[in-house]
Length: 160
Image 1: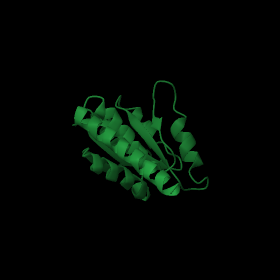
Image 2 (image 1 turned 30 degrees about the horizontal axis):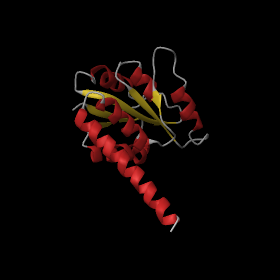
Image 3 (image 1 turned 45 degrees about the horizontal axis):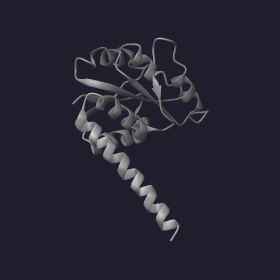
């Protein structure tokens, strides 16, 4: 099975990244986590992206707040899918991170999830990998059914 890269721009992104790690663990998807800043460690971030495919990665999730250039910096150096997670914080409470993540130039795509959307980023990465992994697709289908059943149970309890 392909791995997922979890790359944080700072350790302050760890609480949001942990949600992604937890979701990947639940699905049995291997991952590797690193802290690489687009601005403070650009060489390391670039090297990770350049070598990720050869090291068995199938997708990369980038967590960053404020300037949020990490997802774009990684995407510029790989053709693997990169999922950006804008993190709340700073003077604009994450709006700057959201806008920086979604405003990528043509030819360098970055998928973007909601502010602090670590779990959805992990699920999207797993769905990407599941295109070629039937066992993972079955796990994702089961997770969706379970989530649906939980909602229907709440509905039933409400209407007793």
